[in-house]
Image (cartoon, rainbow, N blue to C red; front, side, top):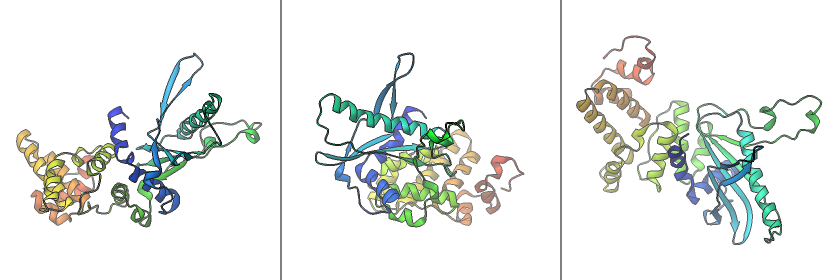
Length: 306
């Protein structure tokens, strides 16, 4: 992932209300164990030296201290993944180990250290495939003779698209919109934006754009935001109208109406319009709309009916 995309993915989850909500739902079944006011950012970067003496940096996506005044309960890391990574357990060991090492260094330098606190990492899997490799032994080849002596290490992975409807309803923050979108995509159900603006609307749409690659989530957003705030349209209606206007403008300007219409059809489908409504809006046949939604035009499986 490029640096800009990495930063965009983190924006929403860096808010304490969202971070706490994610952990409370995924780890504690929605109980408010962690309160937003008890979270504090910590520098997610750590350094390590390899055999040739060169110092390298490794960086978590997001790191928060869970504390009450001066008492630290834990350091919690959050990682975003849009595709499966077989070596993720090894990466997490590096992150967690670096945070434990920091505690030892503090003690050696004379800093007051009454106890050591746990380090916990969570991985959010935004792909449409369940994560399989969640422990160290799934990544390495161990000789039979050494097997009894090799310690395993498990990581906490949550497949966002495979959350249950009950879990999605437990979210109190804007992350519930993101979770609902991925669950709907996986189930091929209709996704509808909430009628009201999210608390962190810009960050919600930027996260959806970053993890899906679909720039329509953020294009023309200021127009959408204005329409909703003035009470003229719901969020879903305003967002779809902006997409439609953008598609028509590009089609006229560049002579690419057919390609834009496909994008409009897919966008209308995601938000929840019926096939018949979509066909009427874009001026195409119901059969054509169905074929675009099913991806047949992209796979070259036959001639489309216009």
